Each structure stands twice: as C-alpha cells, then as structure tokens.
Image (cartoon, rainbow, N blue to C red):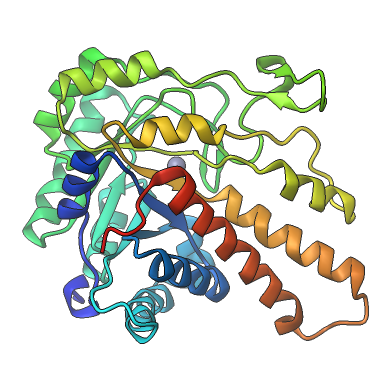
Length: 332
Ligand SMILES: [Zn+2]
C-alpha cells in the first residue's frame, strides 16, 4: 500500500471547492509519456495552476502502473525543483471500470479515482460507485462518478450516441452514491472526431465544421439542483484546427476532425464545472510537431530531436488552456 500523501500528491476536495467558488476549472490532462508529464508540470508551474494528471486504464497498461506512480511522484519533485513551493498535483484514474481497478489505483498512490458506471443500469451505477466511495474515503481519496453517456471513442470507452444527463436524477444519484464530483453529458464527446459532418454546420468562409452547441440549459438545471457541487466535463478537447492542418500538411490524414469551441468551455469554467478533461489536444499537438519535424528534417533520427519540439508544442497548448480557457492560473 502506497498512500498518495507519501508521494506529495493531493486529492481534489479543496481544489474543487476553491474552483467552484472562484469560477474557474482545474485542467485534467491525460498523460502516458515522459514528455507529456514534463510539459504538464512546466505549464502548471509557470502559470501557478493546480493540475490533475490523469491516466486511463489504457494508459496504465501502456506505461505500467508502477512507473506511472513514480512519474507522479517525480512530477511533484520536478515542480518543486522548478520553483513551486507547494505544488497542487492530483493523480487521477480516468474511466475506472470496476471496483477492483479503482481499489488497485488507490492502493498504488492515486489521490483521486473515477468510477464510470454510466453504461450500467442506474441502480448498478449507484451500487458500485458507493462501494468505490467507501473504500476511497477510508483512504482520503476523492471519487468522480458519471451519469449520462458521452458519444465518441477514448481508449476502451466508446459509444455511438450520447445520452444527456437527466437533471432529475442528479440529487438522488450523488446523495446515495456519496461521490465527490459528477461527470455529466451535455454534448461534449471523446476523441478527435467529436461530431459527424451531419451534426455540424460548415463555415462558408473556411469550409471548416462548426459543431452543435453544448446543452447549457441542462448544466444550469443541474447546478440549480446541486448548488456548489463539483461538475466534470469529459471529452473537452477543442481539436485546434491549426494543429490538424499541420498534421494534414505533413502527411497526416485527419479529415473533418472537430472539437468543442473554446468559448463554450470558457463559459462552462465559470459555472459549477470545476474539472475539464483534455486528452486529444495533447495528442494532436505532439503529432503535429513530430510530423512537421520529420517532414522538414528527414535525416534526424535521435528521438530528442523530434520529441523536444513535441514537448514544447504541448506545453504551449497546456498554458493556453490554463490561462485563456479554464482560468486556473495564479491560484497557488
Ligand atoms: Zn472521458
């Protein structure tokens, strides 16, 4: 048993309380590589932002759970080395799909876990979430639950259609499950193809897809029923078109990739939404920089030569999200 406290990590409780009260959101960036981790820590330290570093089951399988635990500990020590006296870093399990996986993460240094029972029948979702909450709270670990189904694909999580969260269920669900935060479905979506061209309109000037707006009416109804309760948005990458264009200009093939417009996420950040998940944007920033580098310098074969610009590009993106979209800067 390794407690996250030994690793210098924190849970989300105080962080979310401050974010809801302050009208901003904490960035939750997925990571599985050293370069992503370095870029996340550098961005958080430079902007004085709390940060959630999250890993999915797939990331854990890719990078190895033990290594990830020490990377999170390394992230805390690295932040201190960069001059941050009191780093606020959470290690969070994204989309835990069983009690056993959540328990294993809690036993191995995670300070926060998500149990995603959104695809289960309602009562079953409550039952397992509650089981996770009881174990987690005994170890002072916080728990995110999910109600409503997001469309899109992310590692093992996939659904063709979304089902918006029903506001009339949120009080019963959060009270009976005891969860600390709730991921809801209001039209965000996993992956780099969040909407089909049929769901979008096209900007006549650029020919780019314009996605349908998020269901803010549902968000506001949920906020009314659960005042001050931390709300989470998954699938909230913006899929920056300049990165998509760079990828496509250098041999990539991502036609009609489309994300959530940043002005909508900016608006959501000011509400009870206090955690916004961003994964695809990091993948795109990394891929764009690497593709460009390979295209321009075909003779390079030292990984540092192309991973350095990839890391820089991700860092730039993380800083942009923190300062221009979520507003979590200058909070340490
Ligand atoms: Zn998700």
